[in-house]
Image (cartoon, rainbow, N blue to C red; front, side, top):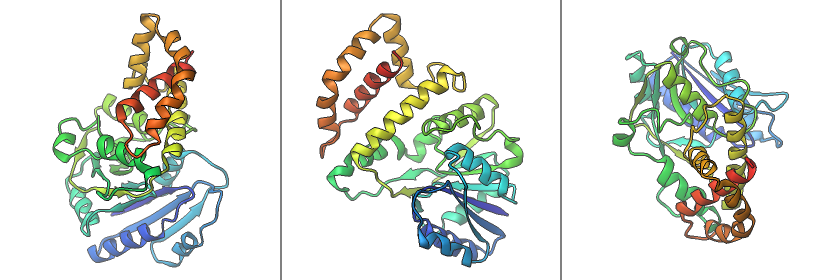
Length: 294
Protein backbone atom coordinates (compact mmCIF):
# COMPACT_ATOMS: atom_id res chain seq x y z
CA UNK A 1 0.00 0.00 0.00
CA UNK A 2 2.75 2.50 0.93
CA UNK A 3 6.53 2.70 0.77
CA UNK A 4 8.09 4.78 3.54
CA UNK A 5 11.37 6.22 2.26
CA UNK A 6 14.01 7.84 4.46
CA UNK A 7 17.20 9.34 2.97
CA UNK A 8 19.86 9.72 5.65
CA UNK A 9 23.41 10.85 6.27
CA UNK A 10 25.31 10.67 9.57
CA UNK A 11 22.13 10.32 11.61
CA UNK A 12 20.55 7.71 13.88
CA UNK A 13 17.20 6.86 12.25
CA UNK A 14 16.47 3.86 14.48
CA UNK A 15 13.95 5.68 16.77
CA UNK A 16 12.08 7.11 13.75
CA UNK A 17 11.92 3.72 12.00
CA UNK A 18 10.64 1.98 15.14
CA UNK A 19 7.89 4.57 15.57
CA UNK A 20 6.82 4.30 11.92
CA UNK A 21 6.89 0.49 12.09
CA UNK A 22 4.75 0.53 15.23
CA UNK A 23 2.18 2.80 13.59
CA UNK A 24 2.17 0.77 10.37
CA UNK A 25 1.69 -2.53 12.22
CA UNK A 26 -1.18 -1.07 14.27
CA UNK A 27 -2.82 0.18 11.07
CA UNK A 28 -2.54 -3.36 9.65
CA UNK A 29 -1.49 -2.23 6.17
CA UNK A 30 0.91 -3.45 3.51
CA UNK A 31 4.08 -1.39 3.79
CA UNK A 32 7.83 -1.27 3.51
CA UNK A 33 10.34 1.03 5.16
CA UNK A 34 13.52 1.69 3.18
CA UNK A 35 16.38 3.76 4.55
CA UNK A 36 19.16 4.75 2.18
CA UNK A 37 22.33 6.02 3.82
CA UNK A 38 24.18 8.31 1.43
CA UNK A 39 27.68 6.99 2.23
CA UNK A 40 27.84 8.42 5.75
CA UNK A 41 31.27 9.22 7.11
CA UNK A 42 30.44 7.51 10.41
CA UNK A 43 28.91 4.11 11.14
CA UNK A 44 25.90 4.05 13.45
CA UNK A 45 25.32 0.58 14.88
CA UNK A 46 21.66 1.18 15.71
CA UNK A 47 20.96 1.84 12.04
CA UNK A 48 22.46 -1.52 11.08
CA UNK A 49 20.02 -3.23 13.49
CA UNK A 50 17.07 -2.00 11.39
CA UNK A 51 17.58 -4.93 9.00
CA UNK A 52 16.60 -7.31 11.82
CA UNK A 53 12.97 -6.20 11.51
CA UNK A 54 10.46 -7.42 8.96
CA UNK A 55 9.49 -5.02 6.18
CA UNK A 56 12.46 -2.79 7.04
CA UNK A 57 15.54 -2.37 4.86
CA UNK A 58 18.63 -0.31 5.62
CA UNK A 59 21.01 0.22 2.69
CA UNK A 60 24.23 2.20 2.25
CA UNK A 61 25.39 3.86 -0.97
CA UNK A 62 28.94 3.15 -2.14
CA UNK A 63 29.47 6.85 -2.83
CA UNK A 64 27.69 10.08 -1.96
CA UNK A 65 24.89 10.87 -4.43
CA UNK A 66 23.55 14.05 -2.84
CA UNK A 67 20.08 14.39 -1.34
CA UNK A 68 18.21 14.75 -4.65
CA UNK A 69 19.64 11.63 -6.26
CA UNK A 70 19.44 9.69 -3.03
CA UNK A 71 15.68 10.28 -2.95
CA UNK A 72 15.42 9.36 -6.63
CA UNK A 73 17.18 6.08 -5.91
CA UNK A 74 14.83 5.39 -2.99
CA UNK A 75 11.81 5.95 -5.20
CA UNK A 76 13.30 3.54 -7.73
CA UNK A 77 13.71 0.89 -5.03
CA UNK A 78 10.14 1.23 -3.76
CA UNK A 79 7.53 -1.35 -4.75
CA UNK A 80 4.34 0.58 -3.96
CA UNK A 81 2.88 3.40 -6.06
CA UNK A 82 2.48 5.68 -3.05
CA UNK A 83 5.69 6.78 -1.34
CA UNK A 84 5.94 8.67 1.93
CA UNK A 85 9.22 10.59 1.94
CA UNK A 86 10.56 11.70 5.33
CA UNK A 87 13.82 13.39 6.26
CA UNK A 88 15.94 11.37 8.66
CA UNK A 89 15.86 14.05 11.39
CA UNK A 90 12.08 14.33 11.80
CA UNK A 91 9.65 12.55 14.12
CA UNK A 92 5.84 12.23 13.91
CA UNK A 93 4.02 14.76 16.04
CA UNK A 94 1.08 12.41 16.71
CA UNK A 95 0.40 8.70 17.15
CA UNK A 96 -2.03 8.72 14.21
CA UNK A 97 0.52 10.26 11.82
CA UNK A 98 0.63 7.30 9.45
CA UNK A 99 -3.12 6.69 9.64
CA UNK A 100 -3.74 10.27 8.51
CA UNK A 101 -1.68 9.65 5.38
CA UNK A 102 -3.37 6.30 4.74
CA UNK A 103 -6.71 8.10 4.55
CA UNK A 104 -5.25 10.28 1.79
CA UNK A 105 -4.35 7.21 -0.28
CA UNK A 106 -8.01 6.60 -1.06
CA UNK A 107 -8.40 10.13 -2.45
CA UNK A 108 -5.81 9.28 -5.14
CA UNK A 109 -4.03 12.64 -4.81
CA UNK A 110 -0.79 13.55 -6.58
CA UNK A 111 1.21 15.03 -3.71
CA UNK A 112 0.21 15.50 -0.06
CA UNK A 113 2.19 17.67 2.35
CA UNK A 114 1.77 17.22 6.10
CA UNK A 115 3.80 20.16 7.36
CA UNK A 116 6.74 20.82 9.67
CA UNK A 117 6.72 21.73 13.36
CA UNK A 118 9.30 22.74 15.95
CA UNK A 119 9.10 22.10 19.66
CA UNK A 120 8.35 25.15 21.77
CA UNK A 121 11.18 24.58 24.25
CA UNK A 122 14.09 26.93 23.70
CA UNK A 123 17.21 25.16 22.42
CA UNK A 124 20.79 25.87 23.44
CA UNK A 125 21.99 29.37 22.62
CA UNK A 126 24.33 28.01 19.94
CA UNK A 127 21.28 26.51 18.13
CA UNK A 128 19.00 29.56 18.26
CA UNK A 129 19.35 30.66 14.63
CA UNK A 130 18.20 27.32 13.20
CA UNK A 131 15.36 27.09 15.73
CA UNK A 132 14.22 30.68 15.05
CA UNK A 133 14.37 30.19 11.30
CA UNK A 134 12.43 26.93 11.55
CA UNK A 135 9.69 28.45 13.71
CA UNK A 136 9.17 31.52 11.52
CA UNK A 137 9.96 30.29 8.01
CA UNK A 138 9.20 26.53 7.93
CA UNK A 139 6.51 25.83 10.55
CA UNK A 140 3.73 27.34 8.46
CA UNK A 141 0.17 27.01 9.76
CA UNK A 142 -2.15 24.69 7.82
CA UNK A 143 -4.56 27.58 7.09
CA UNK A 144 -1.76 29.49 5.38
CA UNK A 145 -0.36 26.45 3.56
CA UNK A 146 -3.64 25.63 1.81
CA UNK A 147 -3.78 29.13 0.31
CA UNK A 148 -0.34 28.76 -1.32
CA UNK A 149 0.33 25.01 -1.60
CA UNK A 150 3.39 25.30 -3.85
CA UNK A 151 5.00 28.16 -1.94
CA UNK A 152 5.28 26.36 1.37
CA UNK A 153 5.94 22.79 0.23
CA UNK A 154 8.96 21.06 1.77
CA UNK A 155 9.96 17.55 0.80
CA UNK A 156 10.82 16.50 4.35
CA UNK A 157 7.28 15.17 4.94
CA UNK A 158 5.40 14.40 1.72
CA UNK A 159 3.32 11.61 0.23
CA UNK A 160 3.69 11.23 -3.54
CA UNK A 161 2.02 9.06 -6.15
CA UNK A 162 4.79 7.82 -8.47
CA UNK A 163 2.56 7.09 -11.44
CA UNK A 164 0.91 10.52 -11.34
CA UNK A 165 4.24 12.31 -11.15
CA UNK A 166 5.38 10.39 -14.26
CA UNK A 167 9.07 10.40 -13.26
CA UNK A 168 9.03 14.12 -12.48
CA UNK A 169 11.10 13.59 -9.38
CA UNK A 170 14.28 15.40 -8.36
CA UNK A 171 16.68 16.71 -10.97
CA UNK A 172 19.58 14.25 -11.30
CA UNK A 173 21.99 17.12 -12.07
CA UNK A 174 21.60 18.56 -8.56
CA UNK A 175 24.54 17.03 -6.72
CA UNK A 176 25.33 19.67 -4.13
CA UNK A 177 23.24 20.81 -1.18
CA UNK A 178 20.57 23.48 -1.54
CA UNK A 179 17.32 24.33 -3.32
CA UNK A 180 16.57 20.80 -4.60
CA UNK A 181 13.16 21.21 -2.94
CA UNK A 182 12.51 24.40 -4.90
CA UNK A 183 13.42 22.80 -8.24
CA UNK A 184 11.05 19.93 -7.48
CA UNK A 185 8.22 22.31 -6.54
CA UNK A 186 8.74 24.48 -9.63
CA UNK A 187 8.46 21.35 -11.77
CA UNK A 188 5.21 20.31 -10.06
CA UNK A 189 3.75 23.76 -10.57
CA UNK A 190 4.79 23.96 -14.23
CA UNK A 191 3.22 20.58 -14.98
CA UNK A 192 0.11 21.39 -12.93
CA UNK A 193 0.65 18.43 -10.60
CA UNK A 194 -1.62 19.16 -7.66
CA UNK A 195 -0.35 19.60 -4.10
CA UNK A 196 -2.73 18.97 -1.20
CA UNK A 197 -2.13 19.96 2.41
CA UNK A 198 -3.18 18.22 5.61
CA UNK A 199 -2.51 18.85 9.31
CA UNK A 200 -0.04 16.02 9.86
CA UNK A 201 3.19 17.60 11.00
CA UNK A 202 6.50 16.08 11.94
CA UNK A 203 8.88 17.69 14.40
CA UNK A 204 12.22 18.73 12.98
CA UNK A 205 14.63 17.54 15.67
CA UNK A 206 18.16 18.00 14.41
CA UNK A 207 19.19 21.58 15.11
CA UNK A 208 22.57 22.56 13.74
CA UNK A 209 24.57 25.16 15.59
CA UNK A 210 24.10 28.69 14.31
CA UNK A 211 27.60 28.58 12.84
CA UNK A 212 26.87 25.31 11.01
CA UNK A 213 23.55 26.69 9.74
CA UNK A 214 25.29 29.74 8.31
CA UNK A 215 27.81 27.50 6.55
CA UNK A 216 24.98 25.39 5.08
CA UNK A 217 23.19 28.57 4.01
CA UNK A 218 26.29 29.72 2.16
CA UNK A 219 26.59 26.32 0.43
CA UNK A 220 22.92 26.47 -0.53
CA UNK A 221 23.31 29.97 -1.99
CA UNK A 222 26.30 28.81 -4.03
CA UNK A 223 24.16 25.99 -5.37
CA UNK A 224 21.30 28.42 -6.08
CA UNK A 225 23.66 30.54 -8.18
CA UNK A 226 24.77 27.42 -10.08
CA UNK A 227 21.17 26.22 -10.61
CA UNK A 228 19.99 29.57 -11.98
CA UNK A 229 23.11 30.09 -14.08
CA UNK A 230 22.76 26.66 -15.71
CA UNK A 231 18.99 27.02 -16.22
CA UNK A 232 18.01 24.19 -13.88
CA UNK A 233 16.08 26.85 -11.97
CA UNK A 234 14.58 29.88 -13.71
CA UNK A 235 16.23 33.24 -13.12
CA UNK A 236 14.93 35.18 -10.11
CA UNK A 237 13.29 32.09 -8.62
CA UNK A 238 13.94 33.19 -5.02
CA UNK A 239 13.70 36.44 -3.07
CA UNK A 240 17.47 36.68 -2.77
CA UNK A 241 18.10 36.24 -6.51
CA UNK A 242 15.27 38.67 -7.34
CA UNK A 243 16.83 41.30 -5.07
CA UNK A 244 20.24 40.64 -6.59
CA UNK A 245 18.78 41.23 -10.05
CA UNK A 246 17.36 44.59 -8.93
CA UNK A 247 20.67 45.63 -7.37
CA UNK A 248 22.46 44.66 -10.56
CA UNK A 249 20.07 46.70 -12.73
CA UNK A 250 20.77 49.84 -10.71
CA UNK A 251 24.53 49.08 -10.48
CA UNK A 252 24.56 48.60 -6.73
CA UNK A 253 25.61 44.95 -6.68
CA UNK A 254 29.31 45.85 -6.81
CA UNK A 255 28.92 48.29 -3.91
CA UNK A 256 27.16 45.60 -1.87
CA UNK A 257 29.99 43.19 -2.69
CA UNK A 258 32.55 45.69 -1.38
CA UNK A 259 30.53 46.18 1.82
CA UNK A 260 30.38 42.46 2.59
CA UNK A 261 33.90 41.99 4.09
CA UNK A 262 33.36 44.92 6.49
CA UNK A 263 29.87 43.97 7.62
CA UNK A 264 30.19 40.17 7.76
CA UNK A 265 31.55 39.98 11.31
CA UNK A 266 29.01 42.52 12.62
CA UNK A 267 26.09 40.60 11.13
CA UNK A 268 27.42 37.30 12.43
CA UNK A 269 27.59 38.70 15.96
CA UNK A 270 23.81 38.96 15.92
CA UNK A 271 23.19 35.71 14.05
CA UNK A 272 25.33 33.72 16.49
CA UNK A 273 23.74 35.35 19.52
CA UNK A 274 20.84 34.16 21.69
CA UNK A 275 18.46 36.56 19.86
CA UNK A 276 19.18 36.21 16.14
CA UNK A 277 17.22 38.52 13.85
CA UNK A 278 15.93 37.04 10.58
CA UNK A 279 16.02 40.41 8.82
CA UNK A 280 19.75 40.49 9.51
CA UNK A 281 19.91 36.91 8.28
CA UNK A 282 18.29 38.01 5.00
CA UNK A 283 20.78 40.90 4.71
CA UNK A 284 23.63 38.44 5.26
CA UNK A 285 22.26 36.22 2.47
CA UNK A 286 22.00 38.98 -0.13
CA UNK A 287 25.49 40.27 0.71
CA UNK A 288 26.90 36.77 0.32
CA UNK A 289 24.95 36.16 -2.91
CA UNK A 290 26.27 39.38 -4.44
CA UNK A 291 29.78 38.30 -3.49
CA UNK A 292 29.60 34.88 -5.15
CA UNK A 293 27.82 36.15 -8.27
CA UNK A 294 30.30 38.99 -8.84
